[in-house]
Amino acid sequence: MHGKDVILEDVSVTYSNGFTAVHPTRLTVRAGEFFSILGPSGCGKTTILRTVSGFMEPSSGRVLIGGEDQRGIGPNGRPTALIFQNLALFPLMSVWENVAFGLEARGMSRRKRRDRADELLDLVALGGQADKKPGELSGGQRQRVAIARALAVEPSVLLLDEPLSALDLKLRQHMRAELRAIQKKTGVTFIYITHDQGEALTMSDSIAVMNEGRVEQVGPADEIYSAPHSAFVASFVGEANQFPGIVSGTRGGGIAVLETPFGQMLGANPKGLVAGDRAILFVRPELVRFGSEHDTQFTGRIARRDLEGPFVTYRFVTDAGAEVIMHAANTGAPMQPGGDALSFGFSHEHALALPEGKLAKTGMEIAS
Image (cartoon, rainbow, N blue to C red; front, top):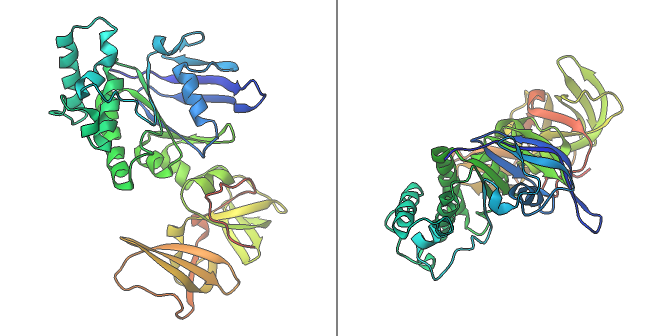
């Protein structure tokens, strides 16, 4: 098996009622890449997947797979396979029969179908499970059967529509590693749809973040997390303290100075904000630190403490009334709410000033 690249050239999708689910989009997925499309429900990510798979035709633009225009080619004629959320396994068939289901239509003999199913079940670590029924397997095992069945038809591109959403947290985390390992073994191009940031950040070579039918940013996981291009991406991907304000000036080295309801704050200025611009300063909780040596400094008390195993989340209320969240290592010597006032803050290189814009509903908002 080998992957092919997928290119969307100004693809848009507008429904008959006039609603535009996907605005003109240019996107390149490289051959053999694990590519995730991340965004909230209703942002258009599944519509893109259905367009690539051939279940929908774009209203404008075109889809290229391996350099070939897919216009007018239905799902069965494309070098793709699609795994749905519900897996759609056949409960009365054995595991190997489920895996080999697509091979019978190709005229392959029963013996060869069984041999191919056994190969794929070994690939997904289900050797010895071939004669069981899907109902006898765990949720994670059924997930792997669905992957093996999709790989049986030797697709160049495997499309996965939130396949882990029905699993519990521990199993989802385990299956992330399994999916990534399978993708690396096969070299097939994976396009993975999810609203779960952890899935996208953990597994992906590249991520496209979508909102309201538009791709807001494309890049590797580290870049999406550490250098978001917009307020939406910064607030949707990971947690972030958010301080709204107005730029009062700039300093050398690409630093913006913001006047906020909680005092003056400094942050990196990648978008070239100037005096008078409305902006939001974003700071990840793990980059808020104890001490009094920071560019932006607070004094406040712990309002809440949440133990999360290896780290602790502290929720502070500052003397100026700001709510600030900090992630700190769990040292075994916890500080409890209601104690003395503490000094903490962040340095400008750990904060990001971005133009004011629409925020994700999951983002952490700082009351003004």
